[in-house]
Each structure stands twice: as structure tokens, then as C-alpha cells.
Amino acid sequence: MSYVSSYTLEELIDDVRRRAAGESLTCPGCGWTDPADRPRRMYDAYAEKGPNGGIGYGYRLCKVCGFAQDADGGESYRVWLSTHECVPRGLAVDRGEVSCRHCRKTLQIVDGVAAPHRCGKYLRQGDSGYCCVTCGEWQGPASARPLHGDRRREVRREESSAA
Image 1 (tube, rainbow, N blue to C red):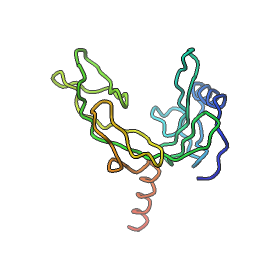
Image 2 (cartoon, helix red, strand yellow):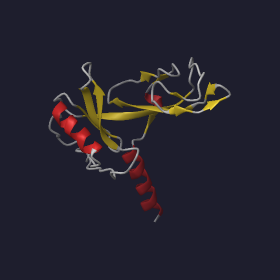
Image 3 (tube, rainbow, N blue to C red):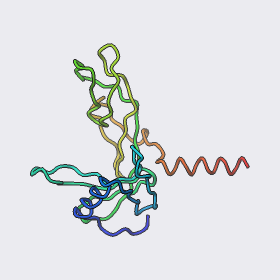
Image 4 (cartoon, rainbow, N blue to C red):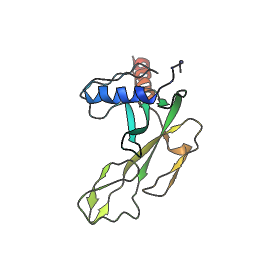
């Protein structure tokens, strides 16, 4: 990954405002830019509310190349993708709709039970895994999946070798 300058909370706030205004953001790691109207973005800036109601923490992340950077003035880093088949445990389903506590997807309810779904998380390189709060299962290196950019490169290699 090439050198990328530090990322500050002020820059994060500007990115969030630009995104809300309909502008596309560009990944500084690989140059990926999402179409402005794409509902599920591959590169975006994410902000969490602080105790006083303003933005207290945030980061930017690219699901294409694995570039990530916290809005704390620090260095950028790489992430890896972990996904698993999540079977919700201990979710009281007494209403028509419930969300996964981990990935926040709306879960399908079948006979009063939340149905299994694909659940995932982006982790820093060097992290050994995590425990999913919805299913309670440890997800380690065996749950690693290719990033979206890696998958696109694999398809191109297969197409060029078939030609």
C-alpha cells in the first residue's frame, strides 16, 4: 500500500457531509470510486456518535482493496474479510422484524425463529479473529474470504487464461 497521509476527525466530518450531499468518495489506496447512487458502497467513511451527540469516532474503509484508516491522525492499515453462516442464538423474536446484533442485517423470521444468514466483519491484518455476538461462535483465519478487488482479479486471470 502506498503512503497515505493521516486522516483526521475534521476530514471524516467533511467526507460524511460530502457523501450526504450525494458526492462519491475515492479510496486513497486503490482509487476506487462508487457511483453516487449505489446503495451498498464499497468505499465509504463511517462515523460513530460521541457522548455529546456529535461525531466521536470514525474511519474510512475500502472493501475493494482492504485500505482502512481511523480518523485519529494515525497511519492507514490493511484489513481482511471474515464471513460465516450465522445461526442466531438467544434472540427473542416476539415481533415481525429483528436485526443481527453483529452485522445489523434484517433477519428473516421463519416460524418465530431468526433464519441463518451470511455475517461478516473486516479485521486488521494480524488480528486472529473475533467472536460473533449473535451466534457466539469464534471466527478465525478459516473464515477469511477474498476482498472484492481480489475476486475481480481472479475473474480477469481466469478470463485471460481461457482466451
